[in-house]
Amino acid sequence: MKRLILAASLSALPLAALTLAASPAAAQSVQTAPVVSPGATVLTVQAEGRTTRTPDLAVFTAGVTSEGKTASEALAANARAMNATMAALKSSGVAARDMQTSNLSVSPVYGQQKRLPDGSTEGDPVIVGYRATNQVQVKQRDLNRYGQVIDTLVKAGANEVNGPSFQIDKPDAAMDEARIDAVTKARARAELYARAAGLKVVRVLTISEAGGWSPQPPVLYARADKMMMAAAPSPVAAGELDVNAQVTMTFELAPQ
Image (cartoon, rainbow, N blue to C red):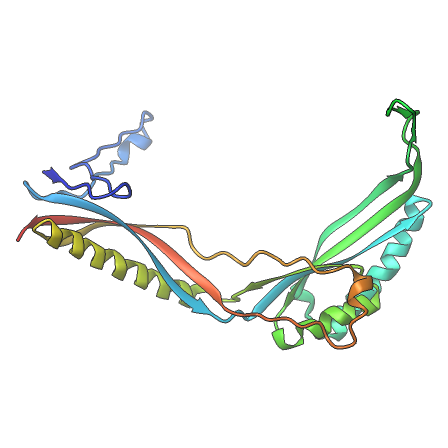
């Protein structure tokens, strides 16, 4: 069998591979590579397919951070503000299934230590209060109302908002389009290499997929006090999302 290596991303496929496990149970499973005709050449090609979609889902986190002299005082203040935040989400049309607590914590707040002339500090850190944080992850399905929902949350008491991460609620159809595009490109590339080498593609031996679409990274919003300065709803542009699929295919080549 001849082997054709055309680039760093191309590799030759062994004629046959046999894997036997050591245990008796696993020894019953035998995997072999496709049988290649004598004198044939094997070509491995990688390709990426792509399609675009307009996002229909915005995922963000909203929360409240409160401070108090004691842990219970900070937590009580936080609970009041967070209940108002959750109520604002519900009044904005966000369903209960689209809200999920992502962080609830209480931690001490330390005072600043006395610094000596040599740059060192004196004494142990002293707790001067406590900080309570509660955050909820939200799925906003009506993107036209996203900015309005954010402004409503801030007015209700939310002082931490992070997002959005624009997503596709049901990406399967888009992923299939990207897969078809990837396979088409891989086949066309194989045909190109085969013609350049004076060969022809006989058949596809293997196809494997790697990678895929991932949500957009979230955008960090300004703190609440700055957000409330805007009289109009916060502007949000959803744009488009790229949906990608990567495939690796091996082809059997033969003389023309």
